[in-house]
Image 1 (tube, rainbow, N blue to C red):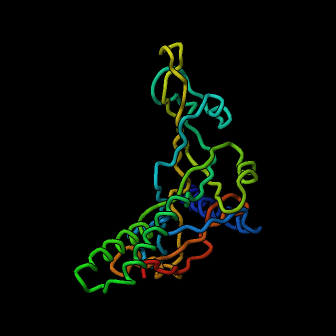
Image 2: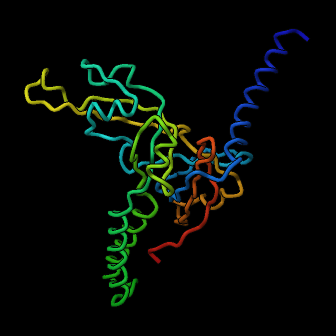
Length: 255
């Protein structure tokens, strides 16, 4: 056999072995952190291959970034920003680590408020009456909040995943990310009275999570006419790789 085909076979073998080895190492110890998300935070990609499962992509209630940061904050994140330009120089684009969690306070308050209105209407008005339209409107609001709204937020950015995990603890995830720094304001010596502030945007790596076929039925039609509600538990393992550890059906709170 010629060297060319042998080299190609060797490259394929290495390319297959490295991710497999990373996955084995990642699962060789209990998870470092876990977080349970809804379909509002992890949405299914419907371009599914029946043999390989589905992919769940991160969905954000607002952009995955931190703003109003000082230059000292940037330095803590291992970033640099020169004085020229809106987007900071190449030194401010790098691999790093982010902490993600759920901002549930406002969302929970809104859902509870809608729930109270639904219960009060149902206590006095039949659903098939003309006044029942108000009930149906409230149910639709509840469905949008539960099925579509995301509570996922970036809470912190840094260079040391272990330090971030110790700071935030379980109920959050530390994820690898590509991070980018931008200027929000200009320093006082270039704009009189200006206060120097920066914004950092983060794109998680990987951009989506693999979901085995055994759980696929629980997420299919979740935002379709069946309005199925599900919860996904994501764990970060020993090697800081995120993976799905459980998918479970959840109650439909508008019923």
